[in-house]
Image (cartoon, rainbow, N blue to C red; front, side, top):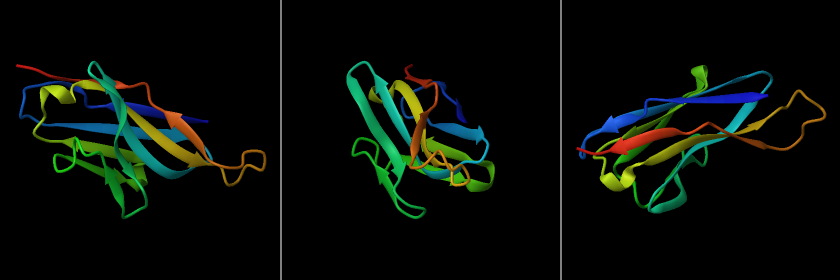
Length: 124
């Protein structure tokens, strides 16, 4: 079993910055990749940023150049640094983790786990 906890959301003024964190906990798991999605009024659920590999990161066109994805593997934590925030960035942000259980014979393949979502509000 795997559990994701997001933190760092809140209210920020246009042009401001926020950093979201997502910590993954559990037993006997190995993370294949992690990502951030968002959904809110005016936007469908969309992919914000994702690790394609250890050294390759995908960014959505709407945030490329403003958002930065990073991770601390030792702490099983991923971060999303958001700069120059705009009102249209306001949404609920969701962290995801694709994980494997290599030591468990009955759990083959990759499983996707979602966090509970965290609110980001951009307003004066």
